Each structure stands twice: as C-alpha cells, then as structure tokens.
Length: 188
Image (cartoon, rainbow, N blue to C red; front, side, top):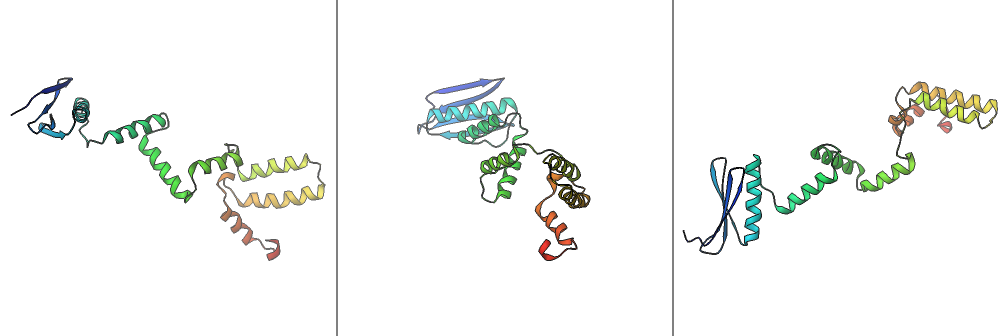
C-alpha cells in the first residue's frame, strides 16, 4: 500500500484513520452507515480536521452532509448569539421576513426608530380605551367644556367604528373610515 504513517482517531468505538499515500497526500478513511468513506487532503492539519469532524459525526449519529469549517464556525456563532431566543431556523425565517418587509432599511435602524417612538413598549389597548385615556388627559388640561364635548363626540364616533386593538389600526383603516364620513371634502 505504500503508507508511511497511520494516525488513528478513536471515539466511542468508532475509528477514523489518517495516512499518507505514495503521492504524499493525506487520506482520511472511516466507515459511515456501513460504507467506507475516503477523503484526500493536502496537509495533515486539514486531514486531522476532516477526521475529527467525521469521528464526531459518526459517534453522535449525525450522518448529514458535511459542512466546511468556516460554515461550522458561523453556525456555532449564530447558535451562541441566539441562545434562548428559539430555534435558529425560526429566528432566521423571522429575520429574513423582516428584512424583506423593510425593503432596504436596515433592521437595526427600524428597531431604533421603533424604540424612539414607542419607548420599546406598546400597550395593548382597545381604540375605545385609548380615547377614554386621551379625553381624561385633556380634561386635566382645563380646556373649555365646548371643546371637550366636541372632541369627545368625534373621538367616540371614531372609537365606535374600530373594534380592533389600537396597535392593529393602520393608516389605510383610518383613511377608509374618513372617506366614509358624510362631511365635505375639505373636512376630510
């Protein structure tokens, strides 16, 4: 066979051999799912990394496709950064959807904008509850009864039209409501 040196890696009864052939290539050999696998590497260090990865895979029962060392490092870093936030694939899917919806705006910038305008928190209020809180705050400002009455009339009218939570009412819903009002175009 012409092998000069054989290095064996052993783990949980599994074995990976690394040897140098006549052309000075480093051959990594092991059995996976009953079939012999061979990989050729130029340097012993590369062969050793390949052998350790194969040994880890077969000793743990993970026989999937092998990934590069760099991809493995990227995966491990991503897993560490997202620890406790949920499964990495779901985090990735949510991130990708957010990026698509932001249409070029960096996610970090969108979060910064959100935190500035909402303090990081949006209370779960109904439209009616928000109107009541707003009117209570206006009453404390010592405004005229006429102004408060008019404000209350219009705001209760709006609140009666939206049974949604306040944070789910968007511009198009409000514009649609305004368009249905029986008032002059100037008032819209």
